[in-house]
Picture 1: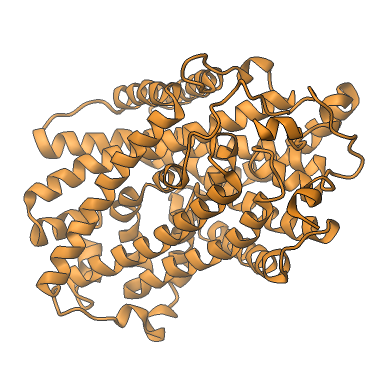
Picture 2 (picture 1 turned 135 degrees about the horizontal axis):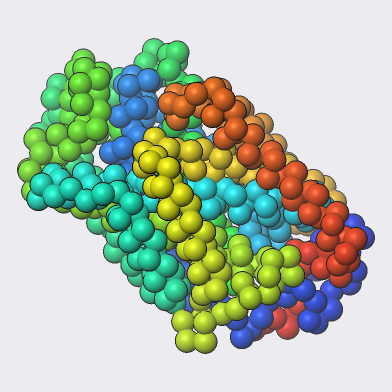
Length: 502
């Protein structure tokens, strides 16, 4: 059976036959189709992970807890997520809806689980995007003080950032892709310069591969390293939500996903290994303990020059902006899809007549960000320890939960429909990724105090928000089923054949 014929038999049990004009159909007059290629989508995904910010801001913590074997943690996280991508990308060829996780979970586990995934996705993506305004504020403060000795209150920076991100998201998706492409090249380029300087100089003690020996990898802190590593890949799975705007999505989405996962895994591991070589295996732990914040800056100054360290301050800020724009675009498209489904207010499904962007959903997300940032500022909260960590914690755990549930949905989906995919794509890889993703999520939760620095009560509340959001979605599905059965029936439906041709 061909892929196309298989896709017609994939509706959840009890679904009515598809018909033109049903809730959730793709609209050829909506988002601009065929505007994104593999590189464009990969830029969105990799930018969401903010490689330079992760390396300069988080990698020192991973080295401090896991020692010189920390690079392997990033490789292991990349391998696990590559396994997830095998089943995920196989399913993208069968599920043509651009509803992202909730569409996949609906096809595999039913509509109630799909509603739960939708509410959890809104919590997770908003938590990630809004929390990073705290990081934008602290990163910009550090850059201004380091370069010009200027101090600006963090709320002013964060609120200005909301308007910048809104404007970039308001413009066309091609404009956003170009912006992200430039910013991503800048932030990765500065790390490549550092790597070149270290390798040409031979490092502090000569280039060594002891980071990859079992004795340095299998240490008590490896679990914490894995927790940091998995969190560093956040956002890579958002490729599927750009299906409406992708050129040849059956080819583009899988390629962009594999490129993003492969690049991030290798680049993270390489960059962490490079900074270890910069200080030497026998001195890196002292450097991390003495000045974790300046670890990459000091190495860049020594091996490249002070001018490069100054650029790194600037590029960290642009890295954060790129990450926020990528998440902002992802949230807007979730809101757009759910509005077209009839679940969220219809206005969120409006598209700008010129830019073809879901601009009303973008306004709504920006208003929510303004409210949250203002509330934290009014409460006198710390932008990093509270706005960033408190918002990002349910966000990152929520995205991992969605990945684990999606892996299970892939397993169930391919057991229920006829297909020509092999056992590797439909059974072995999804099963392995479901087990590994669940284990990683449990690991992160067990190390949550290390990551947030918050009290047990605060951490409990933050973690509990994830299952609560999913349960809210389950309850919403029952309410919609009773009050608006037509919306429930066509939730996460496949686009009509003529819409796909468009």
